[in-house]
Amino acid sequence: MMAEKSDLVQIRKDIENCVGEKVQLKANRGRKKSFIREGVLENTYPNIFVVKFENEYEATRRVSYSYTDVLTKSVELVICKDNRKIQVS
Image (cartoon, rainbow, N blue to C red; front, side, top):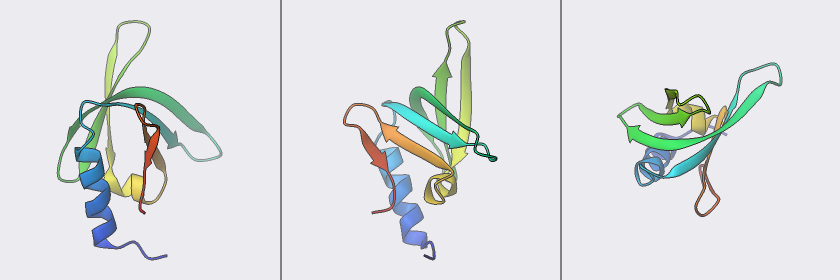
């Protein structure tokens, strides 16, 4: 399936509507490695969104991902409160 620009716009809108929400993020790191973390969707920008992770050592990490990552499914984003996955419908 060919990705449409409108799909990207839709993903971006969905993510923008969830700023401040707790999310579960699953990122594929290649070679069957993936990591799952919970964080807060902190901000959105024209081409990327930022998730803030806090770990047990009181350290805060901010990681940015592109909307294309979600479109190509290399990143899965689930909104914790209603367990809704952000994806192209």
